[in-house]
Image (cartoon, rainbow, N blue to C red):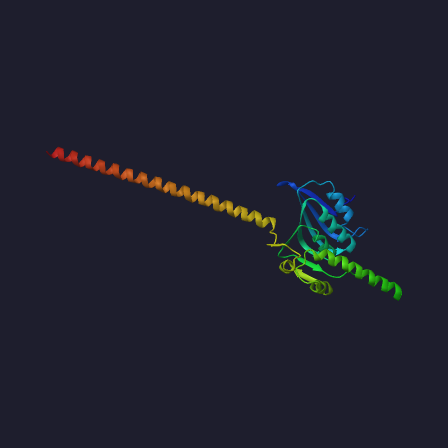
Length: 246
């Protein structure tokens, strides 16, 4: 049996409700190689030539290549459209750098962001390892510059967050300036359908109750007419009997 070749690295679509907005999903590992899912080249291929007024970028990633993250961050900052980043689950390491490129960052309350210093694997002698350490310091500086535009606090506080590989809830990320808005957790589609059905039932019930009230009013009017007619008939009969006696 021949298997379908699926490459879910990028998914971009237009918003059916808003033709002037496109939606881009960045889910996976940040990197340009064989093991990478999210690369600057891929993002550029998707968004170059896009003339929409708004771009909505959904992020769910544990991170990856710091250089790719910085490149995507800068690309989003330079894009003429209004860019909104929405964290779908995890936004860690290089992925958090990507989010810093958006004009607005939104995190549902059940999502997480993580920031830390750059890391690498190295093998070699003291000279080689020292070069690697110096390189990591330079990368850290570029990461700090990427965060600084949003961070609310002192420089040493940001460095402390990176030192401690800090995992942040949505509200905590907002307090540091990494996030602009915290929203309620995304509801299941089935929950939305149930709520919609419940609302429709309530509306239909209220309509039915209203119609029942109208019917009861009509019935009350009919009863009054019947009583009045019966009283008139009784008065006529009584008058007829009296006239007969005479």
